[in-house]
Image 1: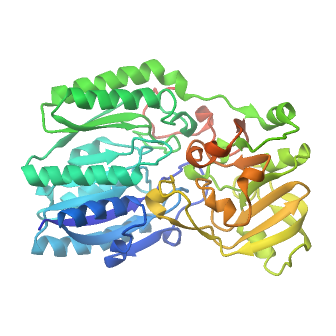
Image 2 (image 1 turned 30 degrees about the vertical axis):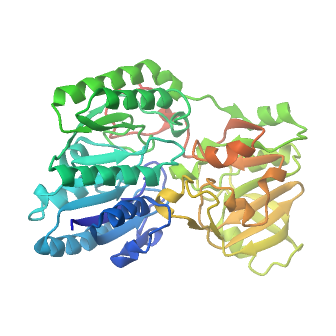
Image 3 (image 1 turned 60 degrees about the vertical axis):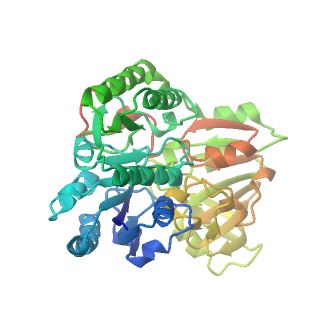
Length: 491
C-alpha cells in the first residue's frame, strides 16, 4: 500500500493592493481534518477519490487556503511549513512513497515572490525527500517558475477557465502518480516562459488565445507518446514576480528535445495571438444609455477592475453609481462591506436606514455611496453551491461562507451586502438571500471570466465595463518592479 503525503497551499496574491493577508484570513486544516473533505468537490477531494480507489494510505499534513487578496504575511508560510515539516519528518521515518500537493501557484509573501518554489526547496532538504516522486495540481493562473519545474516531477494545471475542472485536474494528476508508482517511470518537467502577460479577462478558455493554445496542447500530447501532459499556464497579471505571465510546461519521460519542440510551437502560437488577450471595456454610462429600457433581462455589467477572484476588495461603487444615475429598475449588485452589515444589526424589515455603502477598500474608488435604504433581510451568509463544478469549489468546496450578510433596497436597486468578499461564481449566492437572478433586468458582476459558467446561461446580454479598481485591465498602469522585461503589453 503506497503511502502518500498530502498538503495544500492555495492563495492567489495581488501585489498591488495595500491590504496584507494574515493567518486569520486562511482556512487552516491539519491532519485528519483534511480527510473530512471527501465529497466536497475540491482539488483535495479529487486526490482522495483516486487514493481511496487505489488503496493508498494518505498521510495528511496541512491545508492552508484563502480567498485572493493582498501580499501574505511571512508568518503564514512559516506556520504552514512548520505544520508540514513535522508531519513530513515523522512520515519519512516510517516510510513514504510519494508527495501530492494541492496548489494555487501564485502566492507571494513579503519575503518571497516564489513561495511554491521555496516550499519545494524545503521539502527537498528533508532527508529522503529528494528521491520521492513529487506530484500535484495547480491553478491555470499560477506564476509557474523554473524552480517549481526543477524541484517537482509532475505538476498538472487546470485546462478550463472558468475552472470547472479543478477537481478533475487533481484526479488527472493523481492518476499520473499512480502510473509512475505502477511502472517505476519518473517523469520530469520541461518549462518555458514567454514575454507575455494578459489581464484575467483575456484568459477565458472559450476564447482566443487560450482556446487555441489549449487545443494545440492536446494535439501535441497525442503526437508525442513520451509526453504525459502539457500545461498552458495563463499566469496572474497582478503578481509582481519575475516569471509572472504566460508559460508552458511539458511533463514526460522522454528526451528533452521533444518537449522543447512542443513548447516552441506553443510559444510561437502565443506570440502570434497575443493581441487577442487584450479585451476592450466600455463605459457603464454608454452601455446603459444604449440598452435602457430593458424589458427582458438579465443583462450583465461585468467589471473586471473589482474582480474579487483576482484579489479586489469587492466593494467598488462604480456600477452602483451608474445604476442610480440612470434610474435602473430591477437591478442587483453585491458589495462586500462588513461595516454596513454591522450597522444594520438592529434593523427591522422595511425599516429605512441611512447607510454609507462600499468604497472603503480601494483608494481608486470614489468612496462610499450614502443612501437611504430599506432593510429587507439578514442572514449568516452561508450557502451551498448549486454547481459542484463551480470555479469556487476548487479550494472552498461546496459550502461557502459570505459572513453576516444583509439585503437592502434603494428605489429599483437591490444590494446584497456581505462581510467576507465572495466571488460571484454561483447563482446560489443570490438565491440563498431571497434574490432570484432571472427576475432582474441588470446584474452587476465583480469578476473577469469565472462568473460565466453560472451567469451566461441566464443572461440575455453581457457587457464588460470599465470602472476604477485594483484589477485593472490596463496593466501598464501598475507599478511592476520585479517582472522580467521587456514583456507584452507593457513594452
